[in-house]
Image (cartoon, rainbow, N blue to C red; front, side, top):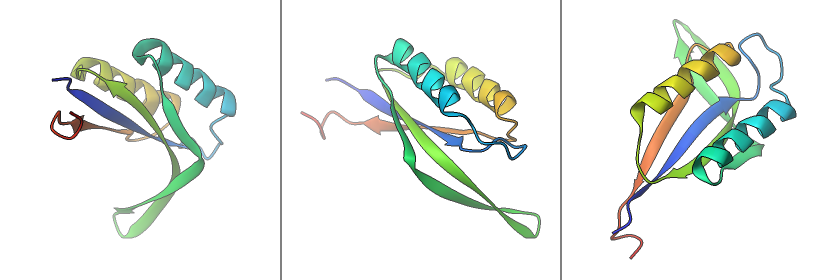
Length: 107
């Protein structure tokens, strides 16, 4: 039975200062994840739009989804990565989520 997880990192395409996140930054980030996990997939060309409520206003941003497959979860690694991305991209919060892969679905 091979358990694995899809870990999704929701990365804004603009920093909290309104500057575009460069292609070079995304390329370096994907290479870093590929080196660690053996591969990474990004959905940069079809960005999603995020909406959330902040006090009485609706905030919005455009995000790219970056995914890796991980055989186990390492909470300290993901916490450190989240904190680093929040600093680098001037964000209040970066969402990182893991989706499990049950062996019954992939015999």
